[in-house]
Image 1: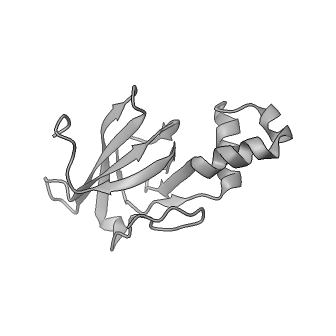
Image 2 (image 1 turned 180 degrees about the horizontal axis):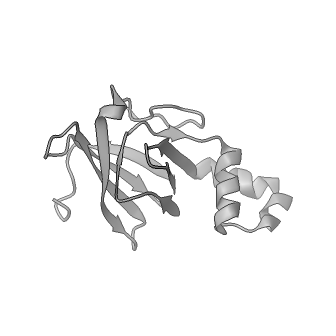
Length: 135
């Protein structure tokens, strides 16, 4: 079961997440979905896939080591949204507006050996199988 609360760590409950490597499989811009392949050790076949839905922003290389995703606190998510221009500073004058926004939007992040990985999305889910159009 995927954890969804801000501050949650290892949200996909992967044992030894450092042994896994992630690879961007597909970003579907019309549906705002980001699909990742996740491989364990040196296996050539994915152990599972990750789907981030309602993606507003992602910052990652094509491949990285580690699948230990965390959900940032609301303030960190909002700050990245401000820094990237997803929302303007005027939103800070309306606490109800940004509270509503951060209630449905999360900053998923992990650190690879290369750099931080960040995804702002509505949800993150582990998939054992891909949709037929991506298989």
